[in-house]
Image 1 (cartoon, rainbow, N blue to C red):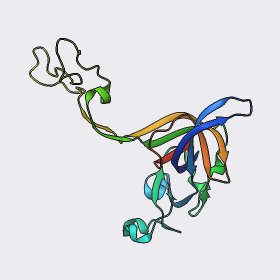
Image 2 (image 1 turned 60 degrees about the horizontal axis):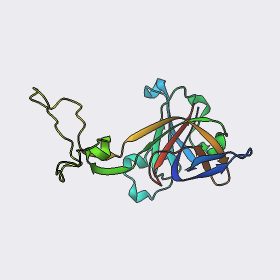
Image 3 (image 1 turned 45 degrees about the vertical axis):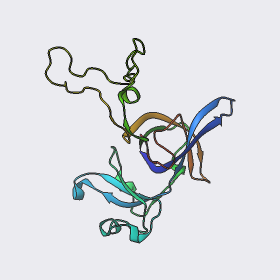
Image 4 (image 1 turned 30 degrees about the vertical axis):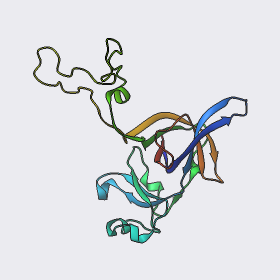
Length: 204
């Protein structure tokens, strides 16, 4: 299993050798450093903790400093997806984009753009009220939420509320190109999040 952390840059087009135009997202991936290896016999589960990016020591609390061996990292993440062969990984190992190859199938997780408090038309795609018969103040209102003989609002009723800032996992994405010199991956399609969003990439 291959894994790496990165940041979303932007989208562009990639022209394949056979002349096909592929929409891709550019990811600045790695390098990441293995900071700790968890083993089931000692820690109760198998996982690999990695550090990504750099950070000033004064911006990190003491609990995290104790885990950051070899440097001060912006992000610490654990990969617990199975199977993980912890015997082949040692603390201090460096993982970069060279572990990936074009054609690898990926599972990518990131946080979507936050859109704040939104109404039902934007959040759920409601049609709103009709614009006829003199109506002018309720074009984007949700309408009735009780309905009929019910004396309460049913569970799961779609209403206005906070939208975005959700962790989204996208599966079956594909690596189109690996740039080892610039530590970038070109991944087919759009990836959730704004520019600079932390992205977790796993190849099964």
